[in-house]
Image 1 (cartoon, rainbow, N blue to C red):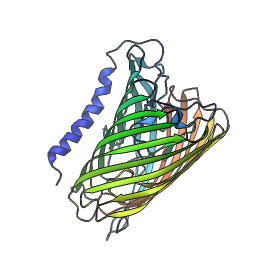
Image 2: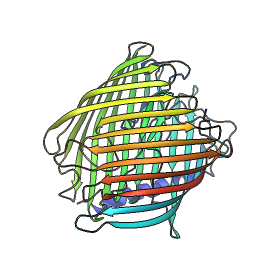
Image 3: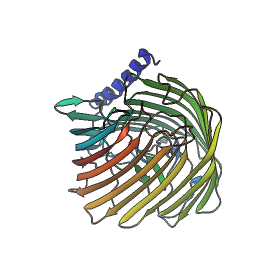
Image 4: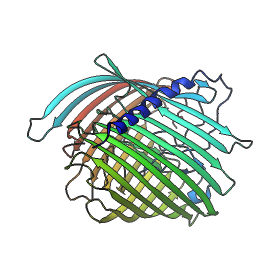
Length: 470
């Protein structure tokens, strides 16, 4: 059984994360200009690992292996952290965005042996993105980046600071010359017992063809997720790059059906990536990740039942066509030892394309990834995103996603998601937003519940640091 001490430690970490950023606002006077961020990282899955390669120029094809260095990705995004801080800046600290959302939800939960339970609710969410960013040294080759996305949730007159997702990230990047670089990264997330989410399932950087998955699962009861990594990158030759990332992770969750059930995990491992440019527009590579995890689980029917060593090995190929087409393919093996040695197919495929008035991306991944619940099994996941810019002010975005747990003797959690988002720009930084979302999930009877959810949202967002749409 998970000890109360472990649970209190997680809650104290959350409290510190919630309180620390506001304390920094009054310590620094305004500084002129804006800081330029050399880069940054966002965790795994084709959600990226805590260290990722720097930008390639946008004007012409440039394979990843020819560009040294590491950079910090924007939190919960596939794109590098924008260099423009916006007008709300206090020394190293800036407020990058503020948003208000009004949610209207209709939820139906299915419990074995009982009639479906339906309930309607509405809630208001205030959220913001806060960034501390500073370069050190005479040549400014050391970069510290701290990102935090808090939420204030109001439902039926009650205010909650922990009822929606909380995310925080720290990246410290060191450039030791033209070949060597190091990045120390930490990603912390808190997923509450009811996740109001109607956004896009996939974040995309169309200049690089990189993606980052967003979790749309409603449940478990609560999940705390923290991942620490240290990426060492070396430019072996003008066409070959090697990176090694030791990682350590902690996860803790409570049951969605019975909150007395709990599951925690401690994990450690490493990821290795080798990328070689075979031409000016094509790369081949090899990626390997191995991780050993220990579990403490009060349930004997759901979640991992024994400690596990999981591995993913992929041979990758990437191709850039022109300045806006990016294609990628990967094939290999995935394995885990939970419940016996299980070996399966690992695969990935992706296409991203940016037109003058429209963008679209399709991404598929089969392997070990985090979809919002703790598991030792690999999963299949596919996402589709399409954005249309109807004119300079109005745009719409469509998102479709599906995942299912694989490599298990019994069917595991799975989910289907669809959403439509609308945005009307009032000014360069201020937009009216609206959207609808639908999710349907099959659970495990303990940590993930069966059911479906319909959502509608209206709101307003302020984001001066966001990239201006074409």
